Length: 93
Image 1 (cartoon, rainbow, N blue to C red):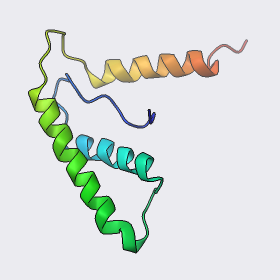
Image 2: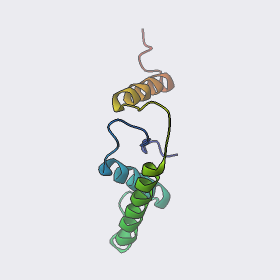
Image 3: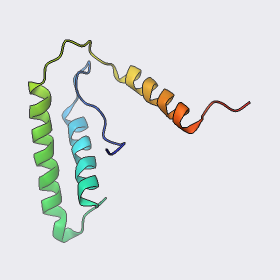
Image 4: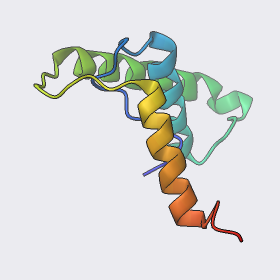
């Protein structure tokens, strides 16, 4: 899975359309292998981003959970802790 695609479900406040589109863009970049497509492929690339964003927004609206809402600050702290453990950051004497 692309590490740049962030979890978007069950946040307070709810995710914004820009966050959904950013995740969709990362997904299409990963699948296509293009960071920025050539002009000939640009329309297909952008259409795919919009389709993925639309499907993602529908999915997020339809999901239900009893779990408590997440906050972006807590998730960012968890990610920093995982990175510190993974890369050995903060363990120097």
